[in-house]
Length: 286
Image (cartoon, rainbow, N blue to C red):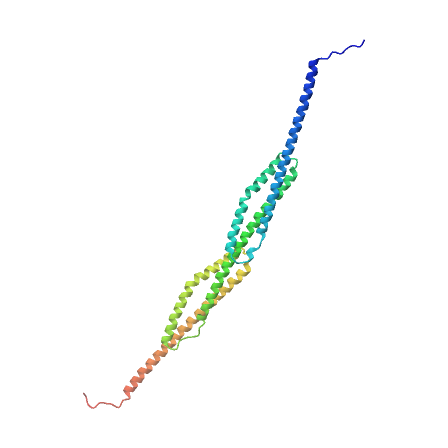
């Protein structure tokens, strides 16, 4: 007769309970792992979306930063003000880039399943962002350089035009018909010399401006040097013409004074000669 086996109902229930709890724990861990993966995937997709949006924005702004509007000298002040607004817009997006960078670096630090892709994207975005800032700064400098160049050229051209106008006076050959005429010419010339003296600081100011631009390594250095040499040469020539005319007027003054003295002496001699040549010796002692 076969021997029957005795089973402990409590042990059977405990065993079944342990099996269920173990499977439940495994399910919870699997669910948690799945949830983590889904959250990581969601964060990654959000990161990619934000990165793509920022990359598109940077590409759009880069076109503005790379345009060569500074080559057109018209309305440079307006262009500089517009670029200041552009730089303010870039600064306003600094937080967006910083947030993206922080998010990406955080996921990499947490060993995200796409860590390498995220790290590569963060580095690429940093390069794009830095390049945008560099190009924006370069454009601002080019606009400012263009404005400095145009201001200098305008002032230099005004100086050259003023010098050309004064050269007509300084090169005059009119020396006076008589003493009164020479005195009048000398008075006008003295006013002319005062005008030269009053404008000498203006010449020095433009010269100093040119030197500063040259020392700064202005991109249009060659043009600035040519203009500087042109008005310095014209100014030197004007002063030489003025000195020559001053000497001629002075000599003319001496000649006319001599002629006046000669005429007066001749008149006096003629008067005395007439008195000496008279036949009237008087009728008596009275």
